[in-house]
Length: 278
Figure 1: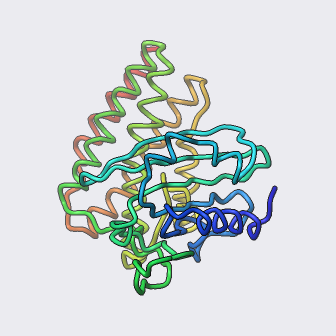
Figure 2: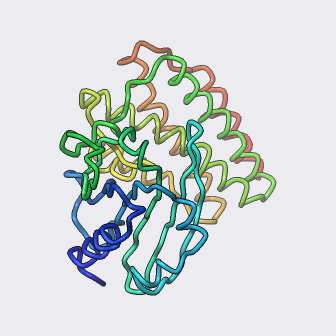
């Protein structure tokens, strides 16, 4: 795998030679002071350019500037009426570069605290603060958000149970591992946030929750993952309920919300009865 110095050298040399590229920004894990440094970190780079469509129309620059691709995903994005091109590129030596082409005249308005200026040909960026996680810390939720998460967990847990009773393992796994889990991760993130002054970033999909949760809560959360065996999915479902109850009561108390104990009790009993029917 190429070393960091070589990759940055290529990114900057390309930008310096090409008059269309006016700004080069680095963001993501390689500027995050709290991310462990390893070779698998992506190079998240933004080129502020005068004409981003031309880079999509003629993509010969990829091989010429950065090497042989293993696989690539090319996307177009749009936000607030502005479109841009994104090239997610994994090269045969294992280097991954996520390269976005955005308008040079608006790139200074990007609000991302994990941003470092690598090149600014025209002085567009001005002074920006040192990179930090302030854009990514868990925000304190309002009462409605918390109540919605509680409802999502318990309502969609019944779908997991139905899928198991019907022998529909893909459906049950989707409900547990995508829908219910998304709400559980929010709940755990709020638990971490409220115990750390709302200054903590738990990472995408809760990837860093283990760093911040008490051991017993992390162990419980790990048990909510199951393979395709129906009995282990049932076990994971009921563990999810126990974890929701433990964390939910603490979060509700701290944030001045009501935990739905009666719904919890009724849904848990309903799922227990469904399991015993099998």
